[in-house]
Image (cartoon, rainbow, N blue to C red; front, side, top):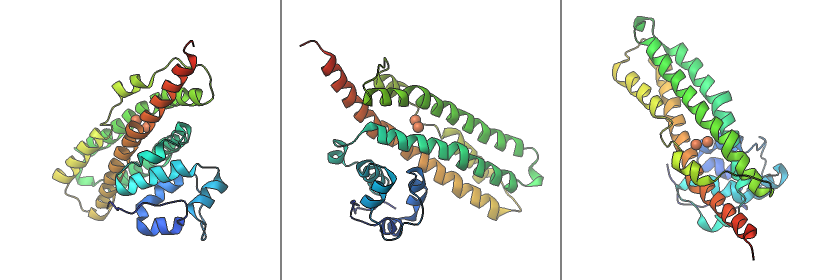
Length: 234
Ligand SMILES: [Fe+2]
Ligand SMILES: [Fe+2]
């Protein structure tokens, strides 16, 4: 559910979670420790060494679907990269293995023909996402960090814009459709649970892409422009 309220650093994290508990996995990606007490977002970000501008921009975007372009002017792209890096880790090290284990547990013995195909769909999807993330981790994120620390970098974010795959969850969607259409099962609770997880991760990956395309890319474009201006002969 999209909300119109915009959170500020004076709001508490508990209020944020009350507004929409779907924000919980996002908090884990900011490395915010649990046990929030009555601390405000500003205080918690301060204690954890997180930029509250980055935190609020991303959280408000996920809750409302709108990007606060005013706040973007104050932000460092490195804070966004840290969040994206933690998100990659969350998907690969936690969420995908969790879904795979639940999927294997939900498969019905009466479907020996289709079961290996479903598992292969999922494994192909994970492999595709791993490659996608690897490029960002090895090429794009080092570029952003080099710009921020005034180090040499020959990359350009326009290369990323040209080749960024917006459909990384396509295989997952196909797999979900096969299950929905053809998979009658004696363990429906388990399979429904897997489907809910798949829908959540699809949506989560779409938001991840939007953050990369609509928040990270403009910030890096600005940083590149500043770098070229500083390097130009006067
Ligand atoms: Fe990414
Ligand atoms: Fe991406």
